[in-house]
Image (cartoon, rainbow, N blue to C red; front, side, top):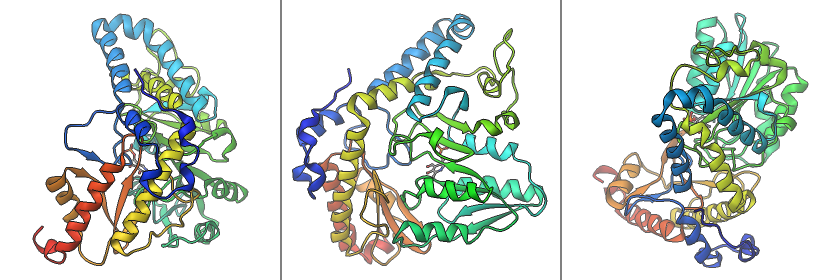
Length: 415
Ligand SMILES: Cc1ncc(COP(=O)(O)O)c(C=O)c1O
């Protein structure tokens, strides 16, 4: 059973700035949809999304059907269920099912794009300096192998407004720029980029765009048909709460004929023959597809609560956390305090010092999972807020941080 909450009581929370004004009873009810081992405070949904019980059960039901009678499952049940799952996901992200294929994660999707793109010598792939490290590695390898190169646009940091972001990216465009690879929401800095404007400008310059979007699914309203990008790579196991190991690749119809899987298999289980680009991705060898088939359960789960409600509550939590962390650290967050720039994750700089041991210490001493990020010579704490994160979890974090700051510099030499 999915536990939802009463929307009426949420009406005025956006204007308030501390936890007391949140509808705590309702939030507790929502949080009961997740199970964490006792004592764990889970504030890193952004790296590894925690799966609600309902979605875990849905996945297990598919797994049982598969394990009970594999041949019947694969030959007769798999494709119809696969189509339903893809249709449900495509509705969520605003495109038609034929434009997207399931892959394990955003990483797999990005590899497919890189694998299929033909580069000439000296071609340039433009990335920002806030891109996810593994994405950078994919394009470093690709360009190294093909005599092309990666060009890095340095984003303003701290950020003040979107125009400086756009300027920073497009000042690095040259006649050799083939593709722009850009996050919808960045990982290391939890920054929402002005993706529509970026895509539009890239298209006007005839540059391909691949949007790296794992953090945007559910966190942002998305209509891929209206976003002028060529490729969109995503994971469903972050904010959408899909099963771990689920993601997708969107390809604009213009490029579909030139995209094929990195790992060649039958495409569709025999005797069916793949006829379209997307059908090459149905069957990539025998494996457990239960995660993909349980994506509709995750979408139902989020829809039943209400995606807007989720966005509103988690942003409100993130905003209060941001303000409290700013008071605690004496620092100011490096992105504007506006929903346009951050959603369910907030990141605040830590006071001067070496905080390389803090993440481990928070887990070992306090059972708190939260990433401590070193980015461009500064230490930051990035806190993820979802429907399972409660004010008492954040209070535990603030108390633990206060203790760590009190022990500084002693903390920093021997935590
Ligand atoms: C911006 C960004 N891109 C790509 C990825 C890779 O996602 P996955 O590990 O689901 O493939 C991440 C993971 O956190 C990310 O934050």
